[in-house]
Length: 193
Image (cartoon, rainbow, N blue to C red; front, side):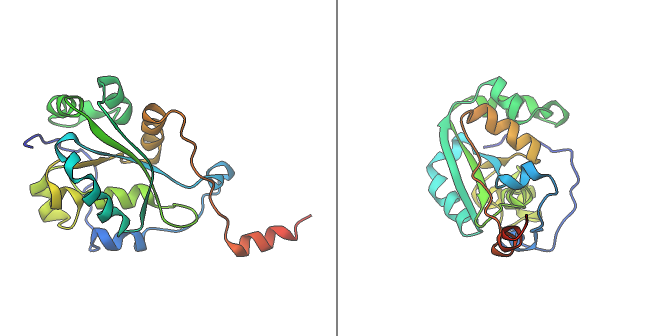
């Protein structure tokens, strides 16, 4: 696949490999009580040219502590893609990217981190996905999905708000699983009156 979408975002580099990333991302809990109630989730797409590698890619993610909550194959419409990446016109090559994303069936996935809260899944998946261009990914994130499998093998929403918008569009009946409180937090709450 020769299509490239150049992201206009901070390209700060980490010394961690993508596989080590899930250990370094914070494990704190939001002060917002509504966000505490559900595990944090994110949204990714394995693009049409890589559907024959879905199981391999999911194995890579599982080995990094990522859990698939829901998955479906769908041919995205332009409206779907605009909901998934609302600011795509800000990226160089967006027209070709839109055409590619709507040209055939893709695999859309809702993901979280293994464990109680799922905190950090958005950052972790962006590290595991890597840059969309394989040449860039090979240099900046050599063990990322897009480095290992090819340009635009996987796209992950860059923020929690974009992930939730994409999930609401593609999986309208999805309800995130409840976060499991730590045993210490449960004991602390047990004695509150």
